[in-house]
Structure formats: structure tokens, C-alpha cells
Amino acid sequence: MTEQVATLLVACPDRKGLVASLAQVLYGHGANILDSDQHSDPIASMFFQRLRFDLSSLTTDRVSLENGIREVGERFAMDWKLSYAERVRKIAVFASKQEHCLYDLLIRHRAGELACEIAMVISNHPDAEPIARHFGVPFHHVPVTAETKASAEAAAHELIAASGVELIVLARYMQILSSAFVAKYPSRIINIHHSFLPAFVGANPYRQAYEKGVKMIGATSHFVTADLDQGPIIEQATVRVSHRDSVDDLVRKGRDLEKRVLAQAVRNHLEDRILVYAGKTVVFD
Image (cartoon, rainbow, N blue to C red):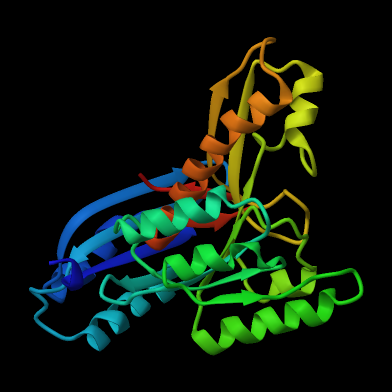
């Protein structure tokens, strides 16, 4: 059944007749809508929708269906994306020396929680190679220094392009990507930040949180943009802390959040639940 399912994501100016027009074109091609979720932003006058539908009852073919959706899209000035569940997407995981998020993603993938192929692990340190090997994932050591940053990013880009990777996941990758590299993958690089953004951006957020005496700490997963830790937020979570907690306690509690938040953000992307607009996101349940 899964292989006969498609997901349509739509974003466009809000107008009357949108929902009916999309439903009509799917019905006209014999597609059976399994679930639908929508959101209207009255301030931006924007409309967003996610539709999942069964393809097994199509009375035409996929090309005709896509042409029908395209016609509606042009009529309503829609940005739309149609994805088929049968297509396995490839992701690359970037890691450094902190391994908890990398381990978590690999374990979840092996358990069948992430519908994708982890095509490679790229790291600026060799430490993660045994981990990748244990899970049968190709590992590439790409060292990065201030002097070699451009060539290192070029090497990473070549690896990604050659393998057909669609999504890059920064699993506590402790390097700042250049704006030129980020521009190659708009809304296709997901980062985990060990803080509840927009608070405590940059390095050592747990130390910053400890010094401020906060009562809650958090983790944030977001798309990477040229502005450090300012990309559209996908997922966040928090946990209560107290004056008794040391910096190490905050780090330990925070790592649990980081793993969960990053995995959920990746899952949302793989399941076509995210639409980006105006520097933020709509994430459908």
C-alpha cells in the first residue's frame, strides 16, 4: 500500500476555490485522498496544504495526473511538490567528534523509523569511522581547517552529487558551512542546535544557560541558511532544569533532547510535512 501513495505539498496566495480545485483534479484522475491538512495565514494571505492520496485507483497515469496538478498550480500561482512513497531518498550525515546524534540516527534508520537510505557519513575527524562501518554506511574523512575549508566543502559536494544525496543532516557537525555551500542546498540542510533558539546562539549554549540560571533548556532543529543559527525552525523541545544542575547535567539532559528533536525534524522532511516561507515553516502533523 505504501508504494502506491503520493504526497502533494502546496503553497500559494489564499483564494477561494483552492481546496475544491485540488480535490477535483485528484478525483478526476481516480486518486483517493487518504488525508488532508491545511493552514491559512491571514496576515501573509497565504494558503498551505498537504494531501496524501492512494494511486492504486488511478484511472489515468502519473504523467496525466501531474499535468492536471500543474494546470491548477498555474491557475492559482502555486508552488507545489509531488512525491511518491516508492522513491527512496538518500541522505548524508555530517558529524564531528560528538557522536550521540549520529548513533541515534543510524539506530533509528536500522529500526525502520526513517524512510530513507543513509548514503554516507562525512566527518572532519576519523573518530566516527568505526560507527559508520558497524552500520554498513560508507564513511568519508574530510578534514577541515581555515586554509582548506573551500577545498573540503568542494570535496563534500562532489561526494554528495555523485551519490544522489537529497538531504544533508548535520548531526552535531562542529563546522560553520560557507554561504556558497549552503546556497547549493536550499532547505536541504538540517541542523541540530543545542539550545532553544533564538536564545543562546553560537557556541557553548549550555554554559550560557547555566550562567543565566535558566529553569528550562531546549534543543532546536532548523534548516541551515547563510545566517548562523537563524534558519527556519522545524522542531523544538524543552526539559526543566534547576539550580542544582551543573553544566555537565545540562549537557547530559540536553543531549537526550538533541537526539529526539533532530530525528523528528528529519522524519518530517522525509514525510513531506514541511513548507518554508517568510523565514519560517509550516510543519503539518
